[in-house]
Image (tube, rainbow, N blue to C red):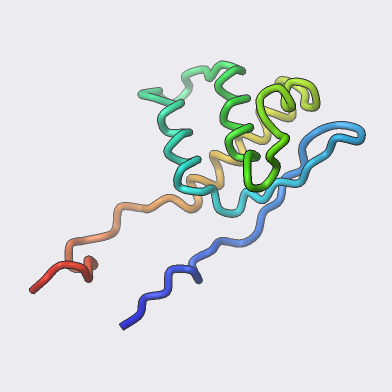
Length: 118
């Protein structure tokens, strides 16, 4: 039996960031697992409504845009080409929305694990 999880890719969502000649388009349809884990680590044990520093928002935005999509986009690029708070805040809100939309909902059971014997 083959179970194909490559077909579980959500609808394409593209965000545009930057200003003037320095505009990049970022595919935020599917945030890679490594970036998702980095974001979870950056967020720590926050409660709903806790403020997030702009440095953390820039780090999150840069991680989502980073290689392989846009190797030139990092925190410094964000600081030079994006506005705080409007564009970086809105971009990070979109990232959090996409993460929530594609997050595992906790519905898996041990019966779903095909690697177990018996």
